[in-house]
Image (cartoon, rainbow, N blue to C red):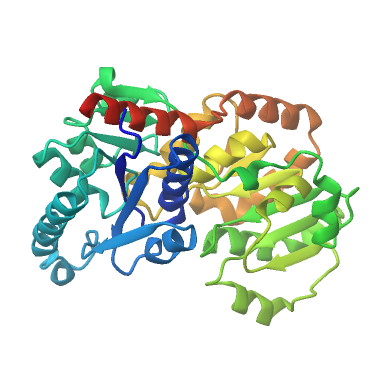
Length: 370
């Protein structure tokens, strides 16, 4: 095999796409230290900052998604797509990759299409349980499609599918023996029952409203809350409640040590992004998922249902969360048998070492090209 293969990894837009992409790149570098990796993202999106911070070079395409509810904003989209395909073709000509990886996000489509035109083998890493239109179309010419859920043959040719799981940040899921240090860092009592609420770096309005509305019931049962509000909501919540609202309530804009928050929690409330679910399966704690309704093809609900049908998580829909979420969490905290069953079943769905398995598949494409 080529001792210094060249690989392009394309995609991004959200942390859910970027973190797996970086994990795959890191695994490739561990396996073949001399390999050369180029990232291709969308100009102005968060990958343009996060990828260089992880130590990799990135080039941006002038591409964006469909703007729902705005015909005018979509008029330029076909021209952006054509321009991005031209740029992607030039990148492939200049970089001469041996293989290309698409992880989803705006930049994946033009780059993988350009790779198909140039006969460069490519791998798709489909993170969700419901494939998007672009990946379904690109899947026809993909050499391999790495998935995280069962029944993906409804979207892709069965012979190309490999169930690998989604790559996760290993430092985030390494929680063994950290319960007391997590409670200490967050200034909580390690012996009290604790709920972790996390809506991601930007936050989730429904989760925040649900917690704020029912704080009296939580405190009445002497339960602790690690409440990660997200940057869009933090200021308003602090203005209404104050930073030191109650010793049992820790209000945070962002969690820098997600591993310690996971370790300190007894029940976790979260959105249902594919990357988050991959982490939660490895964390092995009782989980309540509240899928975001503001995502393409409602894929978070489909992700959550893949766990629910195996009794591996509880699902509360966004519309009813404000009234039912906290009561469900408190009930789960007090039900040892149900909590144990959920923990046991979600552990069965964990797929560790996804990054290494996918990296190995990428290197197989390089060998085939050789």
